[in-house]
Structure formats: structure tokens, C-alpha cells
Image 1: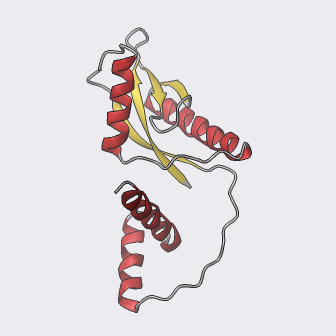
Image 2: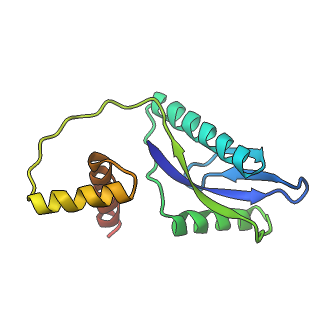
Length: 146
């Protein structure tokens, strides 16, 4: 499962409609009437976008944290002369694209650290592997920008 933040921008001309865009994924846009439909459409659009990009062999951009995604979205809105709206939401959207094959690893850690990892992963609704992969991506992205 992959997650990206999306901007849910209320449409000024169509009450109840949300325009959805993904700041990390240019061109990945959709809309929906009501927040529930907009989220469903966002999940479908995100999944389709990721599947197409993977099929093309394109590198998938890492997901930004909420503050970075929001800053990207606001900068793009400003560039396109889209006024800010107080009802704009930034929500984490899940996608479940066709899976890339996993590689099984054998690693060694102290039992206390494994227990901490498992507790934190459970609190976050993640698996141990998912948490370790997310932590590795975060660490690599942080150190790559230094």
C-alpha cells in the first residue's frame, strides 16, 4: 500500500464538489461530489497513476510529508492564480497498485528494538516490514538532501 497527500479543494462554482490533486504527482487529478466520493475518486486516480507510471518504467516520486505537500500545492495554486479556500483539506490517500515483487530479507536486531518496532508499527496500522521500509525511505531522503 502506498500513501500520498492530496489537496481537496472545494469548487467555488459547484457547491459540494471537491477538486483533488496530488502535489507530488503532476497530472494526477480528479474530483468528486462530497468528500466521500472525492476520496474514492482520489484512491482510484492515485492507483491508476502509479500503475501506469510503473508500467512505463518511470521512477515513482517519494511521497512528501503533509507540510511539504501543502506548500507544493499552495505554490502551484498561486502560480495558476487559484485563490486559497478556507475549506481546503490535505488528506492522506491510499493506493494499492499492482504490486511490485518483494524481496525477502534476513536481518538481525536486538529483541528490544524489534519489540519497539512492532509496537510502533501496530500503533500506525502498519506491518513491521512496512514500517522498516518507510523508515529507510525517510532516512535515505533526509540524508540525500544534505
